[in-house]
Length: 428
Ligand code: MN
Image (cartoon, rainbow, N blue to C red; front, side, top):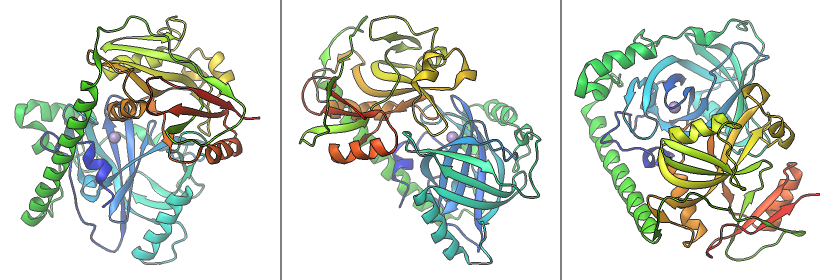
């Protein structure tokens, strides 16, 4: 069903993460997992349509209605994920997970409507970007809102407490143990690594009701996931093979955009958001990386969180992108970027849009669309490094939408010729 993206990202031969599961009972369930991946975050998941709709919340939920937390919508997770606790080995989402909170939930104002009716209204809420739910958890109780921000990042939402009897100024994340095992993240990490090679698989707390039939169907889905991953690897390999063998470049001047007055529609072009920030090229030599301006000036110190993130990325590649500061609505704020000195000045983010070199191959002569296919596969989870999406719409339509949203403009890029990018369009 909706789990294609979930399966595509994971190798179930290595990862103990669940692959399936069917909801039972008359009540909707929610779970919040605390996940120590490359960055600590909380995964907020709501049962809907038989799967878990998921948001990654970097700072975790708050019980104070004045505190709105950024929640990035991520891929749907299988229903059985709500019981998952343990270690995800190297690869996608690597790190330790505990079930920080769980319980039932309902649509706010459900008035005794049945699960199916609520489910339908909830899905509508996801679609329209506005959800109000009432949680019956062990730590989280009462009404919470999830509201999609109107801005550039298409998956950015805000999670916050709605005023009711469960409001509190206390920091709920200080309660840091699992509601399943009673363990903290550190304890789960320790107990599982102590077990040596048996670790992850056995430490995961799987659904107790799991029948052998379920296990079998899980195995079948897992091998489908593997097949997909294999196909992806072959595609990746075939694309990179077209590149010209070359040494790790010391310097690259990124292609600059030409400006045109009017939006247009042409075959063979794609359209992206124009970010209002500083152009930056990341020279990632595995865990040693350099972040440079388009004039070859170092940004390592100036934008140290981005520098840290590209070192943690740990790839052998040269990536082209834009450093931006995002405001509450997910729009880039150039003024805030110019004055940026530390985290207190705003949320830094590195939107990447092109992959120029990878694993000893210069990719600049192969089509942009192919480079971006690989780049998208490389994007780390829950990082300030994000993929700058392109939109499958007409340039004119996209330009009008961008204008309405108050964006600076759009970028039009040629897909198949050996250049990086071409035309920027300015609104207003
Ligand atoms: Mn996560």
